[in-house]
Length: 294
Image (cartoon, rainbow, N blue to C red):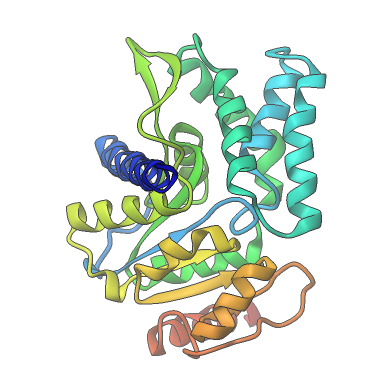
């Protein structure tokens, strides 16, 4: 009986993860690109970037919560839960799935009853105030390398998709896959569509987007800092560990994945392929370096 409940629980989690992935892919494409990026010329390849501690220092939802607290959306004391999760991550070096779930759901509960338009406008302000200077320049350069190679670049994050879109647009990327919150008549209900876009849900989202966009996943690249994103990293042809936690670093070494670490300024430990885009990326990087010297 216990085993049966475990199996049923696992199947339900997988169902919700798949639903979350499908919803995220649909939401990402529903708004259209709408970004001022050069038209993609390599139509079957793309890059997928995790956000928290991969593209951005710290957790984007925590920065957003800080901005909401400053605007009296809730008390500063309510930030303690977010802060504690952030401290555990920064000190421990890895995410706990249950802690991430509790943290994200706590954040989403604060927007229940608010209008989508209101939160999007706040997201724009808070990005400028608390997120813009948290972007890892090294990771941003990797994203630009893919764009310069004519590929589309997508963020993949557990952060609400509306906030993820803002981050993607501000960075000049193609778009974003994020957690989809249910809304009725433009008002958040406080419920999720499926589940958080975390762990296996990210892999489902990438597969769903690839199917809709005609991408060849063998030609795609994914970047993350967390061992929880191994499912996403495993569905593409090239996986890169960025600022990896101890779990992901171990997996990357075993699977000969490339490792990039921008946290200490030391050179990245390159494992496996010499470059995430092969010779094309080397040429782009050389061109960028040449222009910087001029």
